[in-house]
Image 1 (cartoon, rainbow, N blue to C red):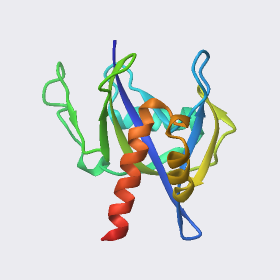
Image 2: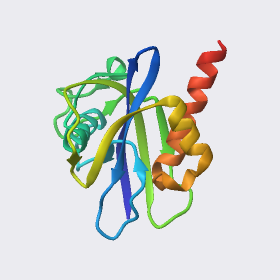
Image 3: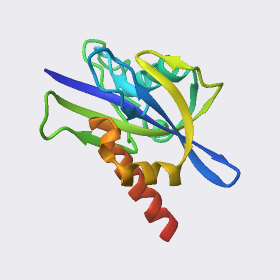
Length: 165
């Protein structure tokens, strides 16, 4: 099996601190781990549409600013039998080993609305400070979902580089 995912790094600035949304995976038969909002795209669903849908289903929030959305180009209207979208995400992942093969994209975004207590196969969506995220990753990277470990590390590396420049 092969899966394609669209995942969100939802950011806000709160009292001079960058915070992002994390949640706890709550799927029967799977360990409960910290993850970023997102999930599989449906057949012929665009990456951005999937991101908006997944964020709403899992957190109750409405994605309103999606980094890279302004780069989107599509061929809709040129040939209705074969339409393609091209967009520049924040980052891309690919599983190199594991129980399933997947590729996914991360988009940084901003949202409107209030967090729900639990969402579609998730619970406890919450805002956490980036420093806390960094410490959680340092303390035990296994508390994060297998898919999002690399995404969180990539994001933290990006922030560190931004801080130095």
